[in-house]
Image (cartoon, rainbow, N blue to C red; front, side, top):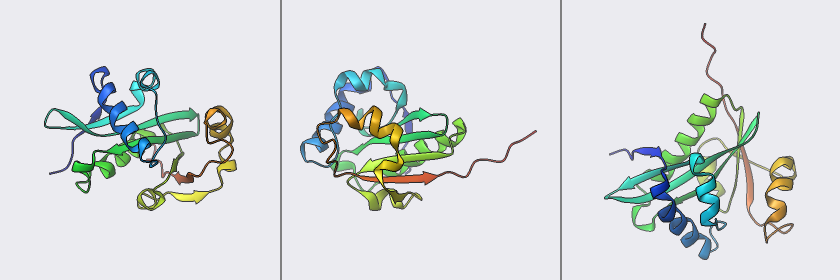
Length: 159
């Protein structure tokens, strides 16, 4: 059964925070403050199973031509069920609907994103990200995440 991807609600924020920071504690992703999740709740998508959030991801618009897929996390007991794939595909679909030609991510798991058409780039090719968010990160300038970019095929215009 395909996972059902839905927009996150305020009630999902604490579970998403725990999920993201669980993996951040294992150095598999960067942590997120609960306040950041609340502030950007509209960016987030979730998969809920059995009354709990088992996966989340966010599509954050950076500019008119660029968005970031971030905070992709799936509970360990729910992995390998298509949840992460469903979340990333939903983010890419939303980016296309918004008319965004390019999506990027910073990750410790590049092979996962490469399955969706992302390819590795130098972080300096993403100056809006580096100088707005990365600059404030404790790992800056020695970031060890891999930058990947995906150029989206836009749907044909209809008249």
